[in-house]
Length: 198
Image 1 (cartoon, rainbow, N blue to C red):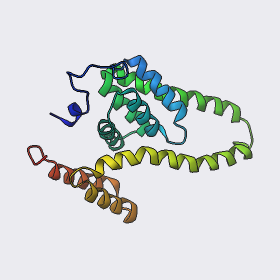
Image 2 (image 1 turned 90 degrees about the horizontal axis):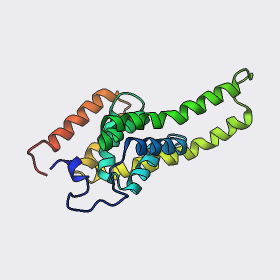
Image 3 (image 1 turned 180 degrees about the horizontal axis):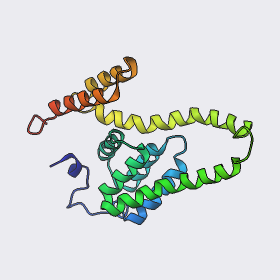
Image 4 (image 1 turned 60 degrees about the vertical axis):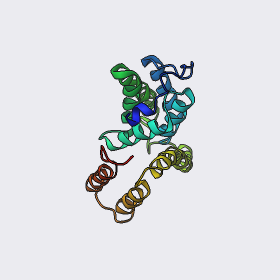
């Protein structure tokens, strides 16, 4: 049984309304709501909360999807929406999720552009000050998404060592991401090779 299969409810367990498979429309609505509340980079935290509360994903399934979205080139929010949508409702789920996550930001940026267009100096000072204060809150929101993923990774065989080594390589030594990522992936494959110990 793969890790993804283990993340789904057992087949003999009755599916409750909270666990019913999501439709593309329900995923689009979820991601519109997530995008509206995911100000300051909090989209992964809000996505996790929304998926877990509906019973559509487990912590482990979300951590796996979130990690893959982080490793895939492109905007992380769009990657996460596409991967969650594809995992839960196939191609149409991916398309609906991406449209849902992009639409609120697109509309907001159009409005901000129209409002600030022609104003000398860009945003008014009061709004600039408010955005500086919001940056601190955004950090806390980002941590609420990262910590559950760290908890899942920390519980894996070799997880603490790989986590600390990658943090040191990227955060302290400031090495390039791609070589560190390739070494980390290689280490993960060695530690969790198919047919190896569970």
